[in-house]
Length: 170
Image: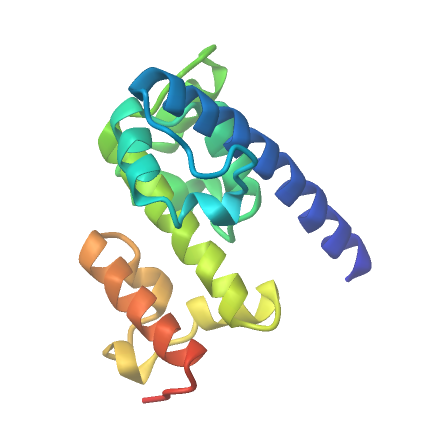
């Protein structure tokens, strides 16, 4: 377990560095002023204007790769969420300076946001991952992970996480 925590901490450090670089490039290309120049992965989800500009610019594969490391989703899961084949995802990985289309960028950011909030709500990443894969009465007896395929489902999952965070159980 200690090794997993070190790996998680190292992955979070890398994603923080990648977000900081990416936020700077979004800021420069859109003439957007950042509230905080030392933005972290967690801060990123609080700045909705930055997210809007990031979606329009597209997400580089290099940042997606770091985000992928701090989420519970496999490459197959990501391909399904993005509605692309695993082979296409692997091809993008090989392309130098590949940027995802805005529609894919938005989905990546949504899933990253759910994961970040879920880890904050639950005591451990393991508990959150377990919750994601357990049918929920409040979500129509579906697994929360099943609902993440579209924006409306993502909102239901975020709402349920918010209720759990505030101690309101169905």
